Amino acid sequence: MQLTDRQQLILDIVKREGPITGEQIAERLNLTRATLRPDMAILTMSGMLEARPRVGYFHSGKKPGRVLAEKLHQVKVGEVKSVPVVVPEKCTVYDAVVTMFIEDVGTLFVVREGGFLEGIVSRKDLLKTTLGGQDIHKLPLGVIMTRMPNIIYAEPDESVWEAARKLINHEVDALPVVKASTQEDGTVAYEVIGRFSKTNITRLFVELGEGDY
Image 1 (cartoon, rainbow, N blue to C red):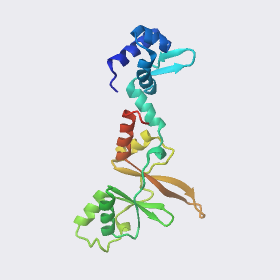
Image 2: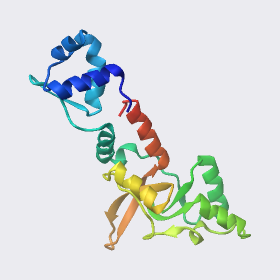
Image 3: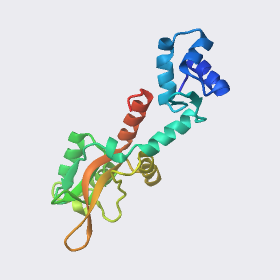
Image 4: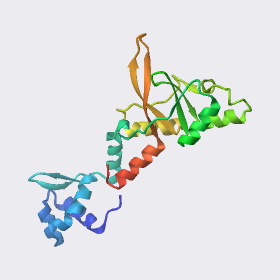
């Protein structure tokens, strides 16, 4: 985050004299409080300044990078997830390729009845199979997909930071967002309720930069 000259002056004053009121800051800069209000709002929302009623502003000691890191730990996957693109296990590889092209995604989630996760297939998986010379019009997707429990997934209450770390560590483009539930036979199934991808992270960064989140 790049501060303006005036915002840096305000930060320096608060560091040196805080806690200090908005009126006192305005006096130091020979400006009105109304003029300073947007700058004070930016510094407060960024986390670099904190305000207490009847006390004034004081420096939080946090750097912009630390503030961003804390925000990424606070935002949950469920708040930023997008709609998942799912296909049935009996879907052919050809149909999966068409779906991936139409939906413009790099990963498809394979589900059984009820929307429960069975597998996952990536653009790389489909490309490898297509180039392998097999009849993709007849080959079921279930033959080439990665199956549970070998699937990395995210849960809605998980932090964006933790989910992003999974994307990096496992070198995947997207994670299914799932809700676990115990079935009648005692097994745990995972209902696909969303998608978390690099695009979601990029969109969140843009919103944070614009102050919209």
